[in-house]
Length: 238
Image (cartoon, rainbow, N blue to C red; front, side, top):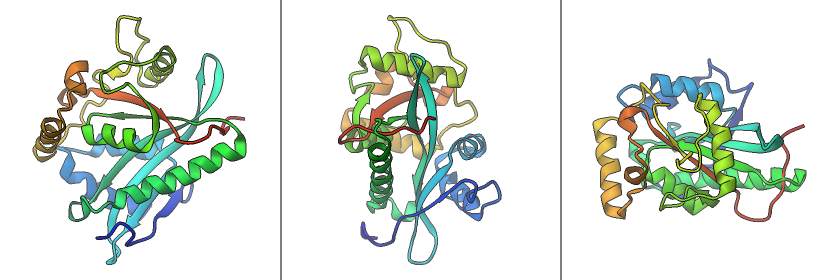
């Protein structure tokens, strides 16, 4: 399927709700990647408020990406942010480039939010897949932690704020606040997805998860923060 085959569509809450038919399609699309995606979908569908998606020329869901627009308080300052949530591509369209269209659609909107409200956005996510980490590095700016696991003092402060969202306390200077253990229990990748992740790590010589001790089998996740590439600006917070 060519990269520009089908247009990006979007739906946001309240039009996107628990009874929306597309939620069933999302569950079917991600099922092959997890032993049981029930807990993951419950978390993601409750948290996110905007969905980007593409259907193929037969009307089937080909790829999707969901986000949550929210306000965080960093050093007691309201900080406009976007959580980069669950995304996936169907088995039949993997490698098609369709997902790039979703990211482009999101970035176009995000730059518009920043320009209109004159504030930079903080983008954040959690992951246990090297492809998601690599993708964020290609699409977004100022990615932390860096590939060697290092981070800035500002990044650590933001990470410690986000850790509280998961019921975790802040870490002192000796720890890595981007490493979150046991926060995604009940969500484990399927053997096929685990094999794919291991192959990517070998091919790319990617060892960040190994270095930092992130093991998805134990429910671990790596917290990631980044920025919209381009000029700063936006305010989602009143």
